[in-house]
Length: 259
Length: 259
DNA sequence: TGGTTGAAAACTGTTGACAGTTTACAGCTG
DNA sequence: CAGCTGTAAACTGTCAACAGTTTTCAACCA
Picture 1: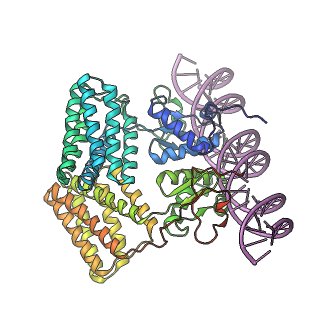
Picture 2 (picture 1 turned 135 degrees about the vertical axis):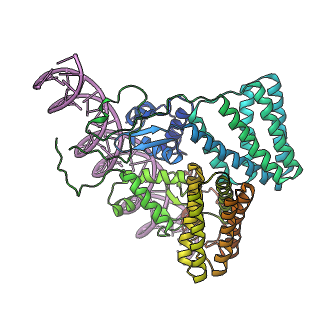
Picture 3 (picture 1 turned 90 degrees about the vertical axis):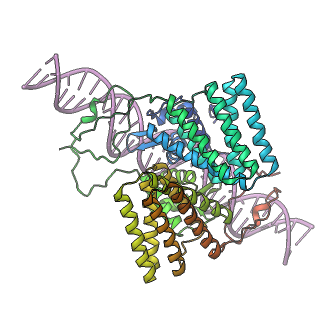
């Protein structure tokens, strides 16, 4: 019984569920599925050439990761990150970056320090050339290296999770040239503090850098959708008229019953 | 279609999956399922009176939460937290506690400060009475309040996740009387720094407190299982003789096949 | 005409079943 | 008797189907 070759080439080292999870995550982060939108299980299943089982399992993982929220009998919705939540995420990333910088100032190998310094130099060239895509990639790599070298795997994992969630607020905003230089100056400050072995300065520089990112983010980012929602009364069939606009996860803990 | 309005009707505010997830999590954290053990899907399903589907979905969530690790075609295993990982977890909890204390020093309501102070006083009484169970509960409540009042929901969520993971290393160790007093002195230092509005002192006090916990932990905790593992060669049927001891998740990306 | 109502369609929650893989165990061979 | 080998049981991965709920939509009534 030759099964039709699915869109995902089947590799047997990972389960279908994990592949589906990865694919849905990509769809969400690339903006292919917008925030607040509902995930259609059957639709995703047929689109990916699998059954609904793996899709459901994948969404459970994504729910725990904070990318979607599930409402009983309604489905799972791509999480909407509010402006305030985005700020919270920045605060935490700031904290973790400072932590990583401190760890590296206290204990790091010459190779690691050289790696970081090299990335800063390459970002410098990209900034001078006004190449924001290259800068964007290198910036990601720099922060990844920072967390990886710090030697706390859980910290790195949490940091990556926070970055993903931040992307839910808005699509990636490519950095303006002036911001690139400012940002990379902060990178350099982090690296030099690390190289100097000054843990406290490294921590402050790391925290300040992401706070700077938060400031730059706050100055430009505008919420896409109106965050105002009308309070829902619990009269029967009240939700019938929810027509226009992006569909929203209804009150989860609400228990509607007929009179 | 008027369904019978039975008051005894099962409240459907949560899906079976979330209930199963909660139950399995409880089993793991209470030590009912030990670290390194495999979760039998069918067994759990029949034990909880559900099908395998919800169990599988639940385990995906737990995997993302870091409580279990899934190996293809082998099953999911309760994660074993090594001594080093436990230290990492403590470092992160330390960081987050310091963060919360700093936030509260910068912005907190009198009610919140009173709440924290009250908890410290109650812990003081418990410590004097040598009542370590009460102290344990109050201590949890104190840290919970600290994270809740700090106003960063994600931080609180991460903190709780870290605490759960810490429990995977070893069952809760009730605190010795001397440790209780020392611990609560640190609590008091946090609260007074918060009340004084000294953000930097509060941060240091918060960090120092969990570092103290880590030190007390390191002094007493002994790894239950030998962390030494022999490197597995990939000859055919090599894993046949893995008899004694707790079963272990075999090499995940390994692909064994017969000659 | 505006709002209500009832049935059909669509979707989610859950289950049981089937296929493929891994593990256990008894038998065989040297 | 030790080690290897083949078969059966157990288990995981995936799927299709059924049951219950929500949403849609056209007919109906004031």
